Image (cartoon, rainbow, N blue to C red; front, side, top):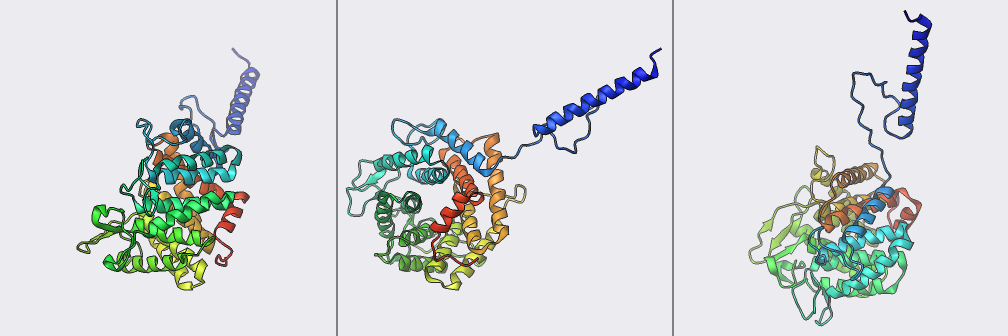
Length: 396
């Protein structure tokens, strides 16, 4: 028969081993401090999720993009993990904006990539026409159909590159590209910018007008010779009259031939109208623009997927509403906007970890979103946007 003291000491040793194991796992972030001791009959607990910062997540996604999509020989990016042709201009714009975000935090690594990519995109630039602009794919030039919105995205991100680097080439190309964007305005439907230079689709779209207004306002901070602020005011007035729904959100497009409206609502359309109104508020000090930006921002709650807490659209659309949320937060200090943006960032990162999208544009949109959220959490990011939003920003 085993003495009682031996049994007791054995039990103590077993308890100490279990406690040591638990402390070790807790230190590694595998289990929370309150986890109960495992029993012999229970399966081992699944490791708890270890949270990373938005800065760490942004670094991880961007490094993966560089490894998976970047072509060192050309300086361009592939369309998907399997389709290796150069990305279209829309995706290039998203990728360039992600790289500019990365270059704020890791300039030694990403500023050379920004510069090379900027030069490589000259393959898309049609300089052989009266009003030059970017074509959707690499071109020999001479007037193929162009998307006005493709060019407007480039204006916005090139001005951001100029704000970061102070290199004149980014601002000069911004001015050229905004001139192309505004060349799409005519008097059909009493104004508005076409979606296509060749009028394909017969539409004047929110996506070819709202970013044009933002582009004008961003350029105007450095160069307002062509009256960019007045252009922005005119575009916003046309958009509000023609494509804003009663709830404050914006509809997709209006056909020119019969005036029929496509009533679909996308996150990025309302996002750019938030930013256009904010830009006009800063430029003119007219309170009505701030009131309208806040109204649209509140209405965007309708885009939330109740199951995930994130925006329902794909990231190539919804990352732009996260950007608008952050810009509106910087102007109003409304914590609900920051919380909404962060929720979207967490969901995007978790999905990327589980299964990175095959398309460059989707991964670039996630990277852009994460860098913007990292900006909010870092001194370098907050200082940058304090300058980039302009000295005429709204009081907190």
